[in-house]
Amino acid sequence: MAARPVVLALAAALLAGAARAEAISTLEPTPAEAAALDQGRGFVEVTPDAAGASGFIRAGIDIPAPREAVWRALTDCALAPRIAVGLKSCRVLRRDPEGRWDVREHVSRLIPLLPQIRTEFRSDYDPLDGFTYRRTGGDMQVLEGRWRLISLPGGKVRVISEGRAQAPFVTPGPMARLVLHREAAMALAALKRESLALAAQGG
Image (tube, rainbow, N blue to C red; front, side, top):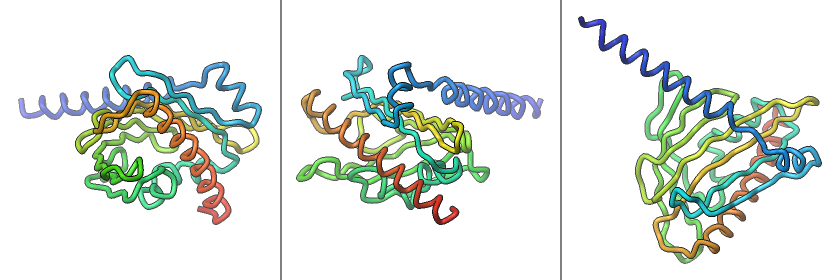
């Protein structure tokens, strides 16, 4: 009977991994988003969220860099403050020895003059393909989403993301979505910049 819990735990882990992979693989650009990307433009869309968050965010960009460089720029905690707007620090609290997941702490100041925000979240990785993330603690009311990397001809990588976020302080919906749009657009530009820098360094 001792083997039964082990088998059940293994089955649960496999199901969780399959669900994560499916969540990543189903993240595709819409025809309008794909058209913008094919024309060399990124896209950011922030809409009201029926689930109660300040906004539902979809964003994407094509980056002419190796997949490994884009992945590192997207997931390296040390590089996070250079990409995420207002992020002051990134710290890994716990991690899977095999690199399939980790729990991180972000400390941010999203809007000047407002208090800093501490966020704790877990990311589940499908290396070089994408990851999902969700809030596990901290000040944010809502934080969850997913990222996907898609290889394109000519050595480009298409990066698509979507997520929900809600800050701990009261902000009118339109203003919150304006801030989210600005931050997402700046983060995409920074992700491209850092990916190209890593590619130039051979990293």
